[in-house]
Length: 220
Image (tube, rainbow, N blue to C red; front, side, top):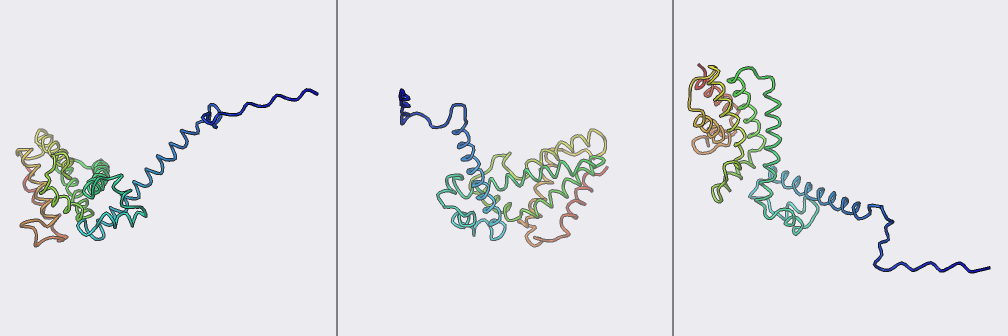
């Protein structure tokens, strides 16, 4: 009986994965999922700690411990604590914009849309007061580009609603750009308790009073 020929040995450099099987791609996908999970855990930890104990009192070590990872890992995803604050706020602004778009769907008339938008803005400020205060404190040191300002999205929407309302004859003729900036600025200072509004910080009656002021300003 003729012996069967010996099987050729596989080279050390020859891939062990059968042809056509996406082993490397699966490994890469798993790695990307782990990275996304780690990044999300870091952001969740930072977001919770900024709310619980404030931005200044939270260290990167605190964030790493809450996320169950290392300080070096945190810096591998975010170059600084400020970068973490920026991303936490960006995510919250995105959620607020979604609520804003959904909340205005049933509003009738431009003035009522503005009132509804300002009510949603007041809710956003109340829910994110500590983070917004930290952002404004940092902005005095480093400066912010116009589209980085937390309320920029509302300023743009408010200016457009003012222009459209004026053209439709529903709103008093006012300089739309300056009026939008003033309304946003007063709401931010008032609801964050800054400058002349310091004594009214946390006053539950203030948001309605500010909206009434805007109504009197804009109503024909």
